[in-house]
Length: 446
Image (tube, rainbow, N blue to C red; front, side, top):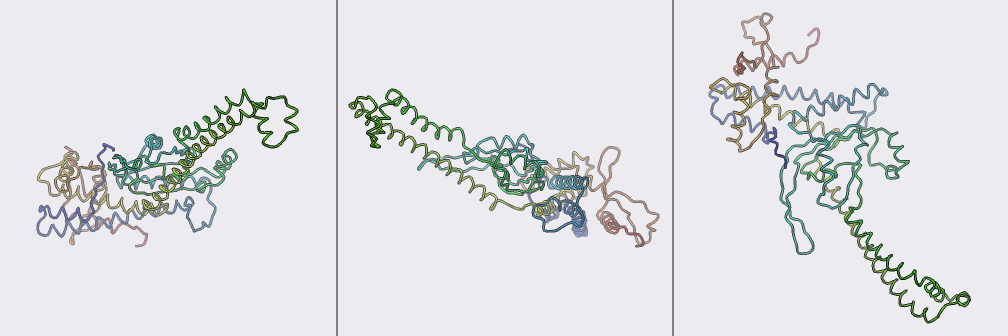
């Protein structure tokens, strides 16, 4: 299990708002003002993330393996590269906003090399990918019981990733055509070259990440190979040792069985020895059949494990799948929007209700302590993201008797020379958000 404290807040935005209200530090009209502030803030960030989603969707069209729409013009190579970069940039942005953590390629490949619950050798060729990203949230331990033999059970602890997101961009058609000439396995692909595949899964064992790749290949482990090969070698050695000194006798014995007497008469051999070789031949054939049957049994076991592995893959893809391809972006944008709003609301509330001046470090510690006391969770709160968002919210505070043209824009959040955080009152903060909304669309002549 990872020792990293995560930034994800495992509660709904509405629960966080209610928890702030139940804290009792907001009284009278401030309760309603705070609720209205949260409402307009949420609507604004929904609008902003919707814009991000639309940009991703427009650029993902040419990479979507499930797309059912056409483009009016052929995409040029330069446009293709720009669109690919826009998709990946948007993908990484929303995952970071959703407080997901990137798994490095080294960790992913190490996980693939270690044994999973099904003892099969698996391989994923990362050279097939132009781009590959893996993000996760929630690294927990889970106790499971494995049945070993008929009456024996084994307790194991496995490392579970509660959420896993993969982005895979495959190389083009030419690469796989060249590869198919050398390897027949690449003649029938389970994916479309040049396309971008996205997968969103829940509760995946870290050692079973290989199940999620569409280009996975299985083969025997060294133990399977030994159990399959040793019986074959065992059958061959006694046969060769017994046959070499009596090879002529064996040939004659076979000819007699085939009733080729005219050939046997031309060979000078002691027929008593031929009679003695028959038991040897029968024993050798019996040994060969026995050991050969054992080898076949081991091969059948291997095929059974392979079928079990394929079932595990099918179950994972069906029961643990949350979204695929274009729908992954929609799901992640919803999560990112929730996380962004929860963080901003917590930051704003704690600055607003604090009896002392707070620096960003003090505020970070205050929120983490509050979350532990109220909800019993330990998180690594992302303090800089929400502070930056509040500082970027700029507008004019205009009262009925003021001239808006003569009023300068101000930030909802600012800092003094000592690094202490200053924030506007609830009423003024609402005015800033209202101004931002009014100016969200700037059209000439309006």
